[in-house]
Length: 284
Image 1 (cartoon, rainbow, N blue to C red):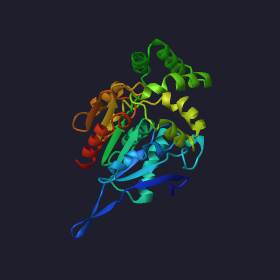
Image 2 (cartoon, rainbow, N blue to C red):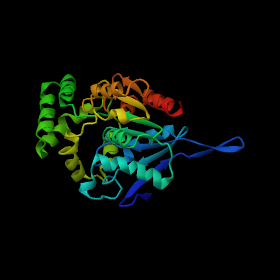
Image 3 (tube, rainbow, N blue to C red):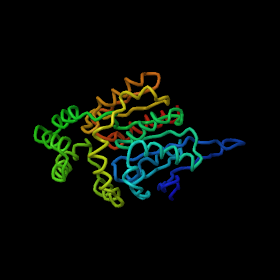
């Protein structure tokens, strides 16, 4: 379904019920808002795996503005501030209070901007494979460790000289290293995500705000409890960035979980361990 948030409509899908019988009353389950990566893709990469959490939370999948099945909006509104504000507008439209906001990769960056811009709105925030600032040297270090100097050179050219050619080579040489355990459904999952893709938005973001955003000086504004998830072998949002976030927030606000033999998007490479941690955080 599409939900109007004023100037555009966001595509939303729901997994699990919000109210469940509990003796003589109905108990409200927490609502987990799932923000997908990309950007320019959609929420479908979460399915069906994230449905395993529907016994402890109602999951609301969202296609970001300009992406997936949501309205395209306009390029001047394709930015972190707007995407973060859209989370609040969507909650207002759906009557969601005290959400748990989960974001992976680009979606995690949106979730972090949301936590900074709207302290007190979320009950909890989950940052999976996320960074508060672009750290190319750390990325190149991991790419070289996983794929050797040639792969690191390809990554270096893309991150420092973004062109159609350098991006195509990056897709072929570097992106296969994002995961340590290839997804047997990977080709079909990618096809589903690209079905309603917006490559123009990806270019707009990757040549602009991706390279300039820096929240390292604003993390003190986050008030929600935060779960930070990281893979030891994540080359595009290296674990150094996750540790930076957790250290800045402090142990009273942040819990850091680092997964061995794991790349980008921890629930993809280590689903059993990742969903166990997520379940504990949701219900704790």
